[in-house]
Image 1 (cartoon, helix red, strand yellow):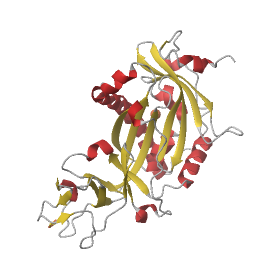
Image 2: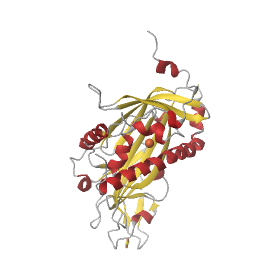
Image 3: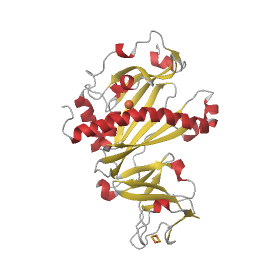
Image 4: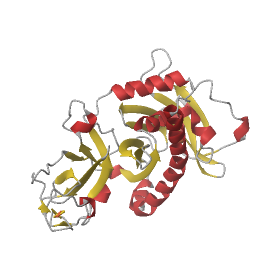
Length: 336
Ligand code: FES
Ligand SMILES: [Fe+2]
């Protein structure tokens, strides 16, 4: 059987782009990017169960003598490791006089309040009740049943990822003035890639979307990542929303098959002007079967900052999109 062009690519991971089309001469995608398709995909994502789990941060940030802390939907939470390595979590407000436990140190697995020395070992104490927490190896989650209001699940809906031994992980975090749905809607619009991020993507074609008859609930995209100059990496990427606040991009063909980029949106609560704030946690788990990838993995500590810089540039623009979407929605000016 003749291999698909994209299958052939996987053995030739880098390509030199010929006959590059200038940015303003590429095919407009707005006719394909039908607002209704994005809105319906968002609605289906929102209808999926999350089990009330929210991303707190990167697992790698859990080390050390400080708890991992975040305010989720206005609730301060702290997560740390007990002496036996078990994950412990609870409200970030000291039950004595309300000190911010985010600023309290962890000593031998016990959280020691820095105001008057009250110690928490993860067991209920004086009105402080522990919360369920989960470390999936890349991200730490906490379950907030009163915030989510869904049927609780024992564990979060964690996307399928490459085996940790085969992957290089980087986690990027940003914050925007918007709601989680604005972050998700941005990711469910794959058509903006080569127009809005020409520094990263070229030759983008959405080859499958849920708007088409009999299509699965996924967006399939052929796109080239720009490496340097005319050097590009052509891949096929599939976007899905496994739960209401997560969109996952799986590389299914081309260099780095199996790699994932997960975008998680966590509602933080209102800012001082009453506007909603949302944290974006983007986990990149890059995989490769290429022989050189062992070296790449050993070089991971060097690579991670670079991966974060790339994600930060994309996210600056994508957050602007999400914030703009919220602004328009909240003032009744969103088209359609
Ligand atoms: S406020 Fe924490 S011990 Fe007093
Ligand atoms: Fe984007």
